[in-house]
Amino acid sequence: MLRSKDAMKLFTSHAISSLAKNDFSILHKTIQEYLVPNNLPVKISELFDLTLSKISKDYKGEYFYKNVIAQKLFLNRHGEKATMLAEFRVGANKADCLILNGISTCYEIKTEFDTLNRLPEQLSSYTKIFDKVFVICANKHLDKICALLPKNVGLLELTERGAIKEVIKANMINTSIDRKIMMQSLRVQEYKYIVEVFFETLPKMKNTEIFDYCLDKFYEIPSDKLRVLFRETLKKYRANDFNFIKQLPNSLISSAICYNITKNEQNILLDILNKYIDEENICTFQSCEVNRTN
Image 1 (spheres, helix red, strand yellow):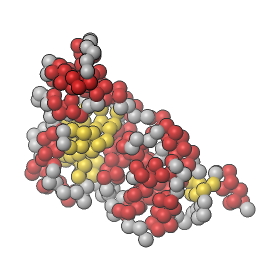
Image 2 (cartoon, helix red, strand yellow; image 1 turned 120 degrees about the horizontal axis):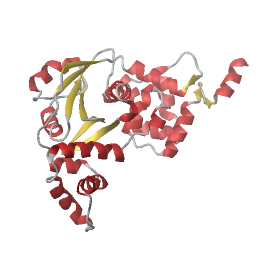
Image 3 (cartoon, helix red, strand yellow; image 1 turned 30 degrees about the vertical axis):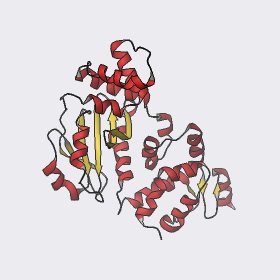
Image 4 (tube, helix red, strand yellow; image 1 turned 135 degrees about the horizontal axis):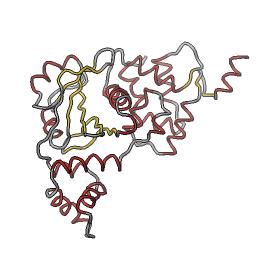
């Protein structure tokens, strides 16, 4: 039988990509060795929700945290006016979640299975470019994190029931931005866009010269203006596909944000999620209804 930690593999990029390629092996294994639903046939989208719900009772891993953030802090609080990113590179670190609306808010996840060894370094990086920074953690880490939390950084607890509880409020960070770290966090077209928007021009130059030129220009942009341009640029170039997100079951919202799922894979995945699975194969709703009546 699968353990909850192993069953969480159903929500990995590899599993989602395999499903979009009509490879149902991971899904079947999860059903047979972990979920074992009593009322087959069951809609595949419901199987994902059932699996994550069962897993969360004894294994709240990083994906579970990201999915709660996506549902409760992103969609429920901000909706389509905001953008959410995952694994956003900041210097030598990667911010687990970033939500952009009127401000940029970073969320660093520490599950009960994580250590806190790298947390001071991570928070030091994040406070150099984001407007607000939170750590969201399991109850077991609260006291230790409270003791090492830098000024202005907030703390959230993910409770046993999957609720988010504010422990320490995060304050706006108004210190000067680290321009080089911000530049390194952006893609070429993004930092070129910032320079072109602020200075209303961008000279043609060799590719080898672009980074240094734009970095020099970043130092000429006031921090408050650069914070705004940073948010607006990311929202422009990395906008979420809400049409896709709204068609997914709650358990897969984070996958749409975290993984690079092509349009073709999205269409295949949505079609599969609307089908039903029985003990041996996948069938459409219509054929399942026929099977139920026979």
